[in-house]
Image 1 (cartoon, one colour):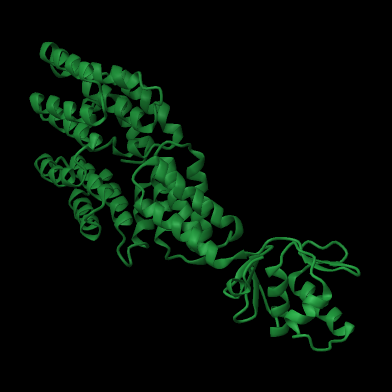
Image 2 (cartoon, rainbow, N blue to C red):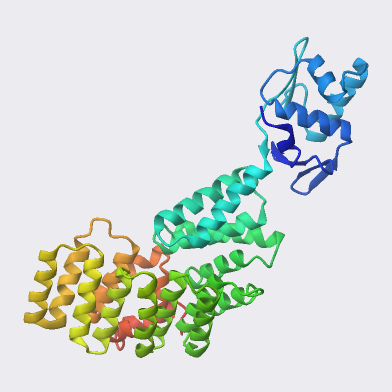
Length: 424
């Protein structure tokens, strides 16, 4: 049994949202109201869903044991079925069993439980910093939407989660799902920032239209949202508007100063803007929050490589490798390789280590694109770009401005990709 007091706060039943406090029944654009006696009847039956409830129990619970004619009872059930759109001859919600009683055929879903599930999904989405956490957020939101498919906030949050999953390399279908969920959410509320953020991702990565992506985000900045600012900063940077990009990235950090994601995005924007000294300063702040951030150490290695600071590049590589738990013997091997062959030899070893990674996820593929570009291996770099492009890879949007790809410039294929990605 479900506590009637809990159901009194609202519940879902076969696509209907039932609000006992105001007597409303709502399903999509259809809405009606039940008189108090009928709502009491519905709540009582739902509190004993899937049980056969005897007529005497109904009379005691709903009519307080008062004498009620059979016609009144029959009329009440007729009106209740009519309001629910149910058919007594082929019932899907409310069944009458002659001489036995009545039965609700499906379980009601209390709205307080749904709200809790939605809040869990949204909170997990906002706090997540690794693929497993994002997947959990996605599952919470999907479960919530099974019983509330037209909830605008949940649709928007799911669209945002889809964008994250797509960006992490879980499949191009997540981009399609993000677009569909975001567009549905905006039909209900055009101001939803999660939905606008998701559509911005779709415009940038799938439609290859960064200016349209910026237009989506312009409608999502009231009030300011750290995630929206981070995305806008990235898009501004890929179109070469570096001062505005850095301002947005710094504002995102101000709004959420403990966010590792916001600090990492600031580092990425500073790299695209070639503000190398500022990168080192900001990285020191990030290491205070997460000293063992392997990706930040390895990213710094790239920054030092493009500045021809070979020794610092190697030290950053070692720090990143140690944070990843690479064996001491492999680090010693890397030291010997670097001492004898310099940065080119280190890059080749780095590539070999990644190519032996059985997972070969999105980040590994992107790292390989960069490493081959830094090494001047244009053919392999463009081959990997071609491979990841159909999956909807946001990282490719940096191809026009990132200093990591300077060795690709001048190759006709670079210009072709800039045009293909809508970055001219």
